[in-house]
Every structure is written in C-alpha cells, then in structure tokens.
Length: 575
Image (cartoon, rainbow, N blue to C red; front, side, top):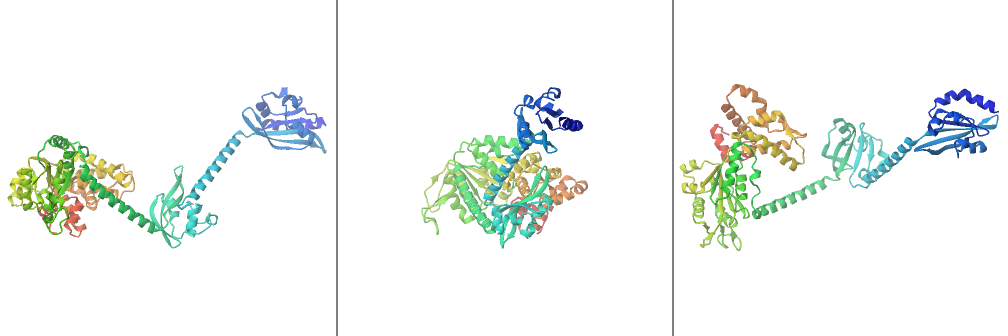
C-alpha cells in the first residue's frame, strides 16, 4: 500500500514542487512523504530533514494526524507561522475505500486578512455616511454619468413621496421630470439656485459634479429650499438685517468718527506719496482745509484720513453733503433749531451738525453747491467760532475743524457771482489738490488688486487677476470717473465673472467697445485726440444706455451730474 501511494505521489511531485502553496502529505503511519519547496520556505526546514520522519516530530500539533485517524476533512482552518497567517485545507487520501494517508494544502492570507479588515472599516464608514445623509433635513440625490439614480436620502425621497429603493437605477427624469441633473456630468459645471418643480412645489436646488481622480463620474443635487417662499422669506429677513445693520453702522459712525485712515489711501506713485505726506502734516494743525479734485478722486476718503491723523481723532467726524440737503433745510441741518422755531419743528428742538461735531471735524462736501444765503452764515461761523440755532438768539460756541471739498471751479463761480470770495479765502487756508487717476496711472495696478481683494470678500469669490488685454485697456483708458469709476467697473465685472480671472467680456459695454477698436484708434490719431474721442464715446454710450437720463448716466460713469454737463458742453453733446 505504501509503495502504491509513494509511486502515485512521486509522479506528481514535480508539479507540487512548483506550486506556490504549502503542500504537505503523510502516509498511513504518519510519516512525511510530500514536502514541497513552499513548505521549506514557510517552516524553515529543508526537505531532506523532513521526508520519511514522523510528522509529529517535525510539526507538532498538526491536524493531519487527526484527519488520518478520523477520515474527516478540515476545511478553512487557520494557523500562524511567525507573523504570517495561513488557511489550510486538510483531507484524507483514500484508495480502494481505505485511508492511506492525509494531505494538507495551505495558503498565506495575511494580505487578504488586512483587506478584509479594511473592507469592514469601509463598510462601517459607508453605513455611517448613509446614516448621516438619511438624518439630514436637506434632500440629496445623486446620479451617474448616464443620469441613473445611484443614491437618494430619506429627505429627498419624502419630498418625492417615493420609496428610496424603488427609484435606485431609474433615470432622474423618470422621477423628477424637470430635472437637469443629468446634464451636469457632461458640462462639469455646478449650478446654484436653480428652481425645480417637484410635486407641484417650486424648490430651490444646487447641482454639482462628482469627481474622482480628476474625472467626472456623476452629479449630486441638494435641495436648498423646499419652497421658493422660504427663500423669499429668508431674503426679506436678510434685507431687514442689512437695513438694521446699515442704520446702526450710520449711528456708530456718528459716535466713533472716521471710517478711513491714511492706510486706506491706495497708491505708491510720487503724486500719492506726496499727498499722504501733506495730509500727515496738515492733520496736526487746526486750519481749515479745502480738498479739491475731480469727482471720484477720493475727496471724502482724504477728509476721513485728515481727521483720523489729527489730535481730534477721538472726537466726532460729521459729514454734510451741501448739494443733497434741500436749501430750506440746510440751515437747520447745520445749526439746529429751537422748539417751535417753525411749523413741524421737533419737540425739544434739534442739535445741528456743527454742535454734534464740536471737539471733532465737520466735513462739508460739495461746498461749491451751497446757496449764497447759507454761504454768508457759514462765513460767520468760521470767523466767530459760534453758531445760532434757528429760533434762538443766543450764540453757542463751537470747537470744530472745518474740512470742505468740491469738484467745481470756485474761481469761476466767484466771477459768476455764485460763490462768495470772502468765504473762498476762509476755506482755502490749506488746499489739497487730488490728482485725477489719469495723472498717476502707475497706481492702477495697486488699486485694481485692492478692489479685487475687497470684492472677493464681499462676493465670496476667489478672483486672482485680470487677463492681459484688460490690464492694457485699463492703462490706456482715460478714466474720466477716476478711482470711483475704476471701482465701479471692477464691481460690475465681479457680477459677471465665473472663473479666477476678470476678462474684457466682464467689463461695461463702453470699455468693451474701446477694447475692440483700440488698435485702429491708436494708429489713426495722436493720444490727446484719442483720449477725447474715447471720453466722448463713453459719455454717449452712458446717455444712450440710460435713455438720456443725466443723473443715471453720471452714476454709471462714476462722475457728478455737474461734471457730466461740463463734459457734454465740451464735446457739444446735445442729448
């Protein structure tokens, strides 16, 4: 019997030697008759020291002897050798109905065990994520690249009034007819604030692609609002909060003083460096300051900076727009009134802006538009350092520094009898002339990046730069509206931009038009004529787009209405 078994196994020995798995066999007496190369590697004993010996002397505790004795197989049994885990199948060798031996085949499963453990962790994580999604009150639904639903959470299923298991595998349009979620994997672009009708209800959703290793493998939709009315209510609530915030900001501003300092004046050109140094020196004295410059050059910002750098910075900074306050109310606005001074006067009277600013600074913006009658009263305040409320004969001393600003040619107004010469000299003790942007174009880059950073915060975007053509256009454009126009142009671009770069297509139409025609214009005309033509075209474009409304056109260009009329007269524009 032994010889038959040995002869049979000998024929197959060459095959067993090449097998990667451990193969070990014993005869009916328990002696080792097969011990392949894999066995040598695992147990660390050469074959010539094992073959012919009793298995119990070589590998104590092996289950082969039990299989030989009982004739019952051991399937999927595990054992450890060193740091490695093996699974073994042991079976009896039967010839002519008799047990003539036993054989064991073992395979290392250390890596498989690690994979199984990792798979278990993944299963637990998957279960946790599914629990999180199902616990969310926000509806989620996901599709693959073919538009087939691969995931839907409980909230979305409730919205659709379906069983989640019934819709898995269906095309999204079979479940939500108006959905465009299946288009997102093709475009790869997210969609925000889309309105989709679900079960007769208009919902607000967002859709975004699912990416893996840089490839789009599907898309997911999230219900932001189950009903548009919820969005409307939220928007109204936010608007109310904004209104409250604006009110409290305004009130706080009256108490805390200026919003800006010298650090807020952007620019490193020689002109701006000189201006900042002048502001720093002038701020230390008590003299009245007259700030002059075109509309949009930053006159109010300079007024704030003067106050912030002065000894009065802990006092109030009070602003009055002389052009915005009706003439019949300007006196009471500036000097206040006593109770009963006129019909409708507030009980207890009202404190005027000069008294509010006592100990601080009063900023009289658009001083060139102040009525002549008020100019005489303002002159008296500057000379006597005291005011009289309407309806009161008692003078009240005020300790206030006056900073005035205008974009109008005061010297011409004096000749026309529209501005008092004596007031002009009282105001023009220290004069600051703000340069228009076209005179310091080297600051455009710094200003642009300042506004990009500002609007990134306000819009929640991540714009990093402008394309080369826009930079070239900005340096060639005349900027009649100065820094204010530059800021408005960039803000307008932020409303249009989708990526990290501002492009010509994001600019106002009049700048796009100039970009298209700049090469032809540069080659045909000298620079002064070119600047005049561009400025004239910008004026015409603004007037055309606003239907001839002068105020709206001025706002669009970032200039004052007075400056608009002056330019219209200069270019003989009759609109």
